[in-house]
Each structure stands twice: as structure tokens, then as C-alpha cells.
Image 1 (tube, rainbow over the protein chains, first blue to last red):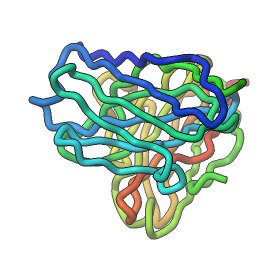
Image 2 (cartoon, each protein chain N blue to C red):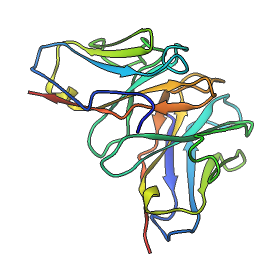
Image 3 (cartoon, rainbow over the protein chains, first blue to last red):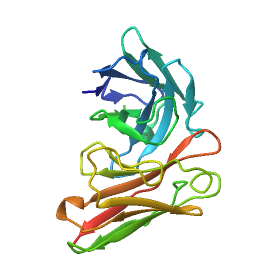
Length: 123
Length: 110
């Protein structure tokens, strides 16, 4: 059974960089041709796609966040990561990592999700 | 403001059917058959209910169905049950090679 688990600091200071990792278990990122993504949800608000990465390292980003977000993959550790720079209070959200249902396709169909991790931006 | 427009809330009685709409443009919903729907209960991760406009992942009840007409996609829930009370989000692929979500719809079972 595929499982995803987000990890990283729950509190980040304004103007600093948010760093999260999604550890994948039950499957190998390098041997399965899937897109993996980051989605966030501010408290009481809707979902926002941050970006997605293919197992090869190819990335796609939300244009509104592209200048601040960087997604990378480490197949040796079977995880992928998100870094978001120059954070503000508006970046406070639950951050989810997820896998797309259909292999080799950048689709909006995320079938496996992590439990989510709350990141608060505050001094 | 979300790129895809959904009603903020809908409600229905047990046993009824209801439909949630998701309106985009020809650059997203109308241009591709890559529309998904998610169900999210409080403090839980979203659950994929529909993908590729009308396909159900394994394990999703056949009470949930999806369709699309022009730039508007729809999620229909038949035989409404108390457990269906949740937030629902649509999502679409776009011509820019990105993904976007709707603002979400709160479903209340009366």
C-alpha cells in the first residue's frame, strides 16, 4: 500500500524559507513513472496547487508561486521536497503531498495523499 | 479568487440527488477531459472521487458521477447520505500546462 508522509518545521519566520519533505513508502519513485505534487490549504480556505514533479525531475509550477517555489526529487531517498522562499503569513497552510493516479501524465487526479502538515508563518 | 467557479454551498435531504457545478473556460475545463472531483471531510486529506470528467477510482460509490458540458463540469450525488456531508472541490488541467482547483462547495445534508 502506497503511503506518503510530509515532514518539516511547523513554524517558519516571515521572510525565511519553508522546507518540507514527502517520504514515499510502498513504491519506488524512480521505478514508477508518476507525477508527484504539492498542494496547500490555508486554514478555513480552499485547495491550491503549488506544483508537480515527474520522477525524472521535470517540474511544473503554479504561476502565482513559481518565483518562490522549488520542488525537487531524491530517488535515492525515495522522497521529494518543497522549498518556498520569502514566506509571509499568507503562506500559513496545511501542506499536502500527493501522487497522480495516471502514470506519466500531469493530471489533476491525485489518488494518494499524505495526511498533511500545518506550517505556520509567524515571528 | 479561484480560476474555477463553484457554488459556495449546496444542501439536500437524505435520498435526494444533487449536482455541484464547476465553471471554467475553454482553456481549462472546456478544453480537456482532465477534470477531477475531490471530497474532503473536516481535518482530513481530500479524497479523489472522479477523474477524467466521469471516471470513478476503485472503491468510490457509484452514487457519485461526473459529466461535462462546454466549460462547465458537474458532480452529481444520488441517494444522498449523511456521510456525504463534506466539502467538494473540482480540479482541471489547463492549456498552460498547470493545474487549478475550484473554490470548493460545502455540501450539507439536511
